[in-house]
Image 1: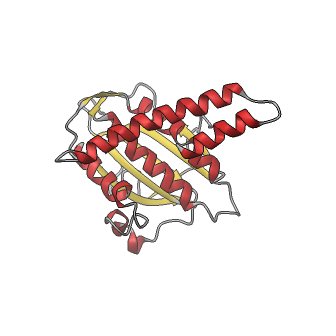
Image 2 (image 1 turned 45 degrees about the vertical axis):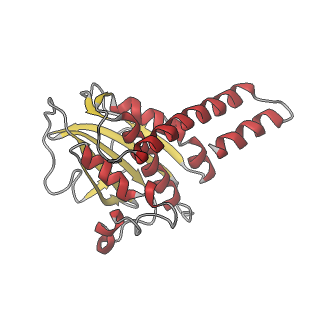
Length: 230
């Protein structure tokens, strides 16, 4: 929210104020405030990671909201954020605020993972597709990659989060997804980077999952069509 506020001031204080950009930044602040409010209510509840407010969720719409709210982070890190969203995906059942918080965190972690990347494009691709067990959501970056020896430790409360940031780290992301009867994991991206991905179950999923990993042992960011560059 702070980044969006500063951006709004910059748009307004320029030699030629850009009112449209300023309005969009302020709208993003409002949306971020709503997400933060609902997240705080979730954390304050007696069972903060339980998906207790399950409703029909259009996962692609939730992703587009998270992408828009991530504008400040991706701009700060010089990252191109793209989407490749499957068409006609079935509706999932869940808590849209919790799922958006997972997506916001995964996008932020992906952007921060590329802070030292200078020899290749800084890109994040958020993709969805229908698989056998449900709707697959994958966040792919082109960072330094995943150390196989530490893959499982990424989701431990302290290892996967910065000091003072445990409540919004990968551990709570995994807890939220598990509360939605899904599973969150990380695999290597090909040729560079990491894919953090999860599947949300639906009643009408029909495509078969590849063996072993949700997207195989590695995932190729260059495969498929990337759209909605933000």
